[in-house]
Length: 124
Image (cartoon, rainbow, N blue to C red; front, side, top):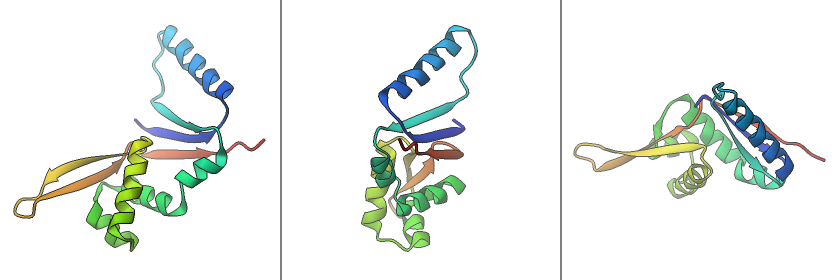
């Protein structure tokens, strides 16, 4: 996947985008690989994408990092980073994988699902 769009919008907009994607597929054309995550309320969107979570996203979009690396470079508490990562993973913006660190247990690597994320808020 190359791009994720995080946007506010209503149910009608969601179904319009779905119809357009279905029409594209019906015509035998390939979809562009964009995934849209939509929120009906822009305030909820900005709550999920708080400043701290946006900084975290920018870090993992540059390159995959471990939770320890993220904690260190963001100067944040490990439990807060872990909590934010859990939310972002449930929303589909990041993925994580566990990897054995020989002699030191297991470490968790985190990466963004796309190289580009657009945030669009429509008010009114």
